[in-house]
Length: 254
Image 1: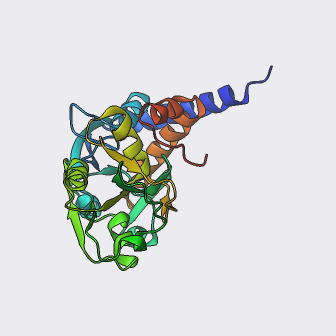
Image 2 (image 1 turned 60 degrees about the vertical axis):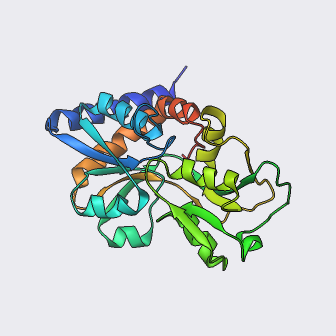
Image 3 (image 1 turned 45 degrees about the horizontal axis):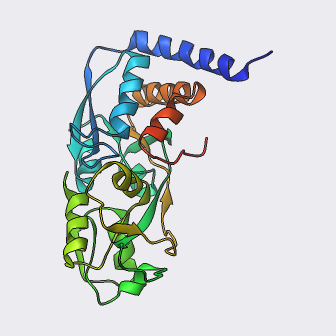
């Protein structure tokens, strides 16, 4: 029987072989989230570490990782501190105007509202917390959701302990709620101890759904093409699905 997926995989891998043969042995610097499951420094690791490891195997490229807070993502890429960004950030007109180009999507991301497990209130929007202290990661769209809803008592966190810090503030009563990347919370709840005693509010309607992608400087057209071809191969043979499931990441629209 004709196997369309196998034919696609062979074709993409052939393209990768040609691209990889022309690649240099230079080690490329990959910036990623400092928080598991997106990136996460050792020993936690994360989705982007595994994804870039598979791309390295397919292309012969070499990568080293920098674990960055979100506000440092774009400046690190445009300032040549890193060469590739793999994170929870998706394409926007603002980032493209800064000279950043993107591959196709690597997962689906959206916001979730987190409160104490003992708080059974059926919250629906961020505006339900006007006048109350709340938290989000600095430099993210999630902090912007609070601001846009008129919630002005916002305490932000950053760095590798940012998620744990937010959850600790919730448990201590310092804040009443957090807005985070919902897929990240699901993983943290299942596999890490930092989310104990908290719940994702099911009645809350997500405000932002985006499709994170690998990002490079727009002048790096050859690198962008190599990464895109590698992603197509990973999608075609099912490897991307395996990595997504490992880190509880929703699949992007293929």
